Length: 276
Length: 179
Ligand code: SF4
Image 1 (cartoon, rainbow over the protein chains, first blue to last red):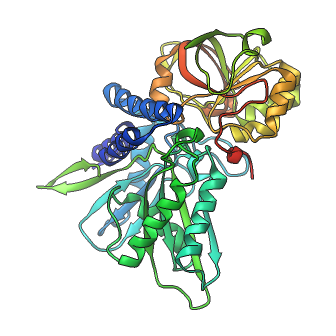
Image 2 (cartoon, chains in turn yellow, red):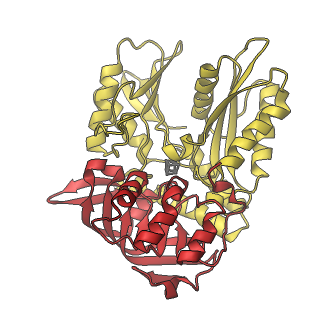
Image 3 (cartoon, chains in turn yellow, green):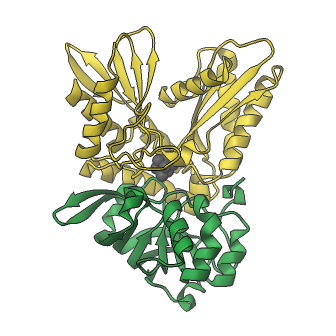
């Protein structure tokens, strides 16, 4: 299991998932601005080089975040050990510090790190999605007025992306959580990022909201690395929860083009790493 | 594509225009928030800071030295608070990063004669390919990402002249500033 977890981490940081590669290729084919197209080409070239050499495609290997499905028991110590080993073996950049002293722990673990989220039910699996700081620093959550509706939600998300500008390494991927309580909306926004690009919500109103946000964000004109152009966002997914009649929490997780994620699944009695 | 040797004199960067694409060769020193702060507090640094790279590299020990595996840029907006101090005290002429500074920084760059070059964010493996060796490292006690890494680079790029020394910028709108 431990070896499987280290492989999971290695795959996630080294190999850009195929759905992201396909989305970047489509964006490149549609791009007319020269500088924007150059950035997209370099992103794809970088991903190919990282995979060929087996090195992390971005030096910011992020905060380690795991998502567990099914029953796992007390697996936290094992996940922490996998992160320590991956830090040495892949290797990962030591990114984790104490929030006040800023002292680096050196092995990417610490209090509540790796971050572990449990999703009850379903087949047992472990997803790993490291979160880089450049994009996470632009993520936001806010209580919107309860009567806000789709237009205001889309406006809020577009505003977050506009303020982020070139900082989160656009084109970005957006995970949006609406409803629940504030921390639940934030978690939903992260779960939304796990979903494959090119899919949409089964709930028509949410699918419509996803399309609306994508349209509004791509009309901002920020473009790859902020140089203008058509593509500011590669994809949007929205997840929702019911909420209090007097509130509407909304969270948006910004993810950079380097949208790294992988999942460990059980197949025929052995563990296998898959990507969307 | 123009080629720039580092350290670059003011004269050689003054002709660069926002939107130009260049490559650079020579020595770069990585510096992030904490290194900027310390250098300005001490008003000195253990190494010349003429060419600064906003980067916290991913490195591995190799014998007595270090090997750079992935070394793309970090978000430059975090270092904007130190920009004027850096240019005034250390005479920096080239800064490489990603995401740019706010519009207000254009005037600072112009007054001191410094150009801001953008490398593709997240392209750590490509960047590492241009790093020929780690010359030395200082302030490792700040942690690996925050230390001053002196890197010898060859044909590092392509870099976009994102903010030039004449007040020009390629950012579609200076939304990349700190708000
Ligand atoms: S925002 Fe993402 S791609 Fe950009 S440097 Fe950070 S982790 Fe890498």
